[in-house]
Image 1 (cartoon, rainbow, N blue to C red):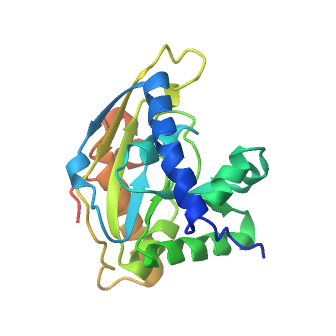
Image 2 (tube, rainbow, N blue to C red; image 1 turned 90 degrees about the vertical axis):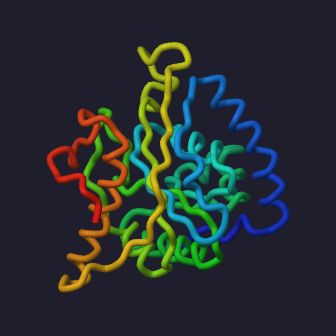
Length: 227
């Protein structure tokens, strides 16, 4: 089993991230017109799980660049072998995702980060949606929340799919909305597997309420009352 990255907590990672933050914000301004709502909901301390829908490869840059806290996220393992970019994601401590059994290493690193009070950005759908429609989410994010007691912050992205895409237009309008934070609790009377599914659905419904109905996809026909 390959070990997840353990970089990012030292002085080099802090310096590189500090230098990259203004670069990311400038890049955001260059490629899109972004509106941000709900910034007051972002907790400034403690372990934090930012749970977002996923529309574009640019989403991690977009969300992390707009947050007031340094943020970590999962990245495909192939990125870690890219020139320059691979070195940057390693040094800043991002988490490589491997297929199959090795995914446990990534989850283990994510648990460690949350236990160290770090914010972690995760896209529970596990892949970029081919259309602006929410996909069915995986339950790993619920396990992370229960194991660590981390606060969950819903993040709804709208329009990022059009960034730097043919036909997307010049500096398309993008909306980033942060919902109200909450701490998930395992529902009584359910098996652990059922409970993880229930919590995952709760997280995704929090995101769905922040999106227009036509973009809720797999969660469009579910009741949006959050438990």
